[in-house]
Length: 385
Image (cartoon, rainbow, N blue to C red; front, side):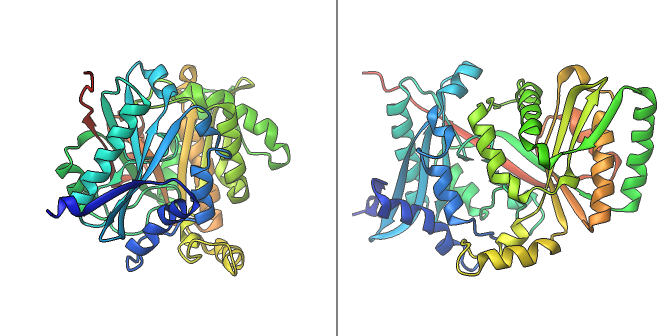
């Protein structure tokens, strides 16, 4: 029996299989100091079709690869008809990919994902990933050779360099790169932003900005919903989130929100933009070992005050209000708060590699590309008789 034939791929069909699926990264990365263990309860929630509203319009199948009865890899096959409706294509996705440095196992997993999406989406012609589980959440494979070392920030992906070799050996090629921009939070950057923001405020007397009102969270979320889907509707790969999905995301993030990093802009009283920055709770999660129990909550409460990195994870501005200085104004206000709270760096992520409109201005106050993530794809051959 060849080495490739020794790999067995099984579909996850019960709670035991799901537990193994969730647990695998904890073994693969146990000696990697840069890996951040996710909360196992969060991973289970994301995959739970009864709880996560994403699965109301999407479908998945989960697979585990075994070699000599040892689990060596995992993958999810994902089909989202809403994506294909929006983009007019027949693309499916893979996600949650983890594997030992075993090209045969990786190919077997990705081939299983291809067969699964072809069955769920007849006529599917492309398999894209990794996405966990959609373009609105964790996306792309980290390119360590083109990135600075260290732990990922909140809701950003992480993987060893050999993953890119596994994808290449399985026939996947680059489709699009996503960038993470790192900027210092300091007086020099703030001074540059202050000058730009002052010009914008003078030129646009109808522009006003304010922090999120946590005591009116439902009202604020309604504004986010109005802006979010309109702001990104023409972005590559973007699929509008349903109202239920945005509610679920807000519920998940609300306990982590630092109001000083969440801003709204209005133009002549009309909602125009919002900025969502989050403290990098990965600095805390790293010490919680994937669980809130028995002492995870205590670690969370004690360590959150020491967070010194911020991830700017969403900035949405309606098309008719672009190029009017709103971005500089909100960046300026949030950086002022970052300095006050002791933040040292801010990551803007992620951004499309060809989004010149946003990448250029970030360089003005010291931003630089410090990490690169790759979305890959391979064609799905026709299975017509």
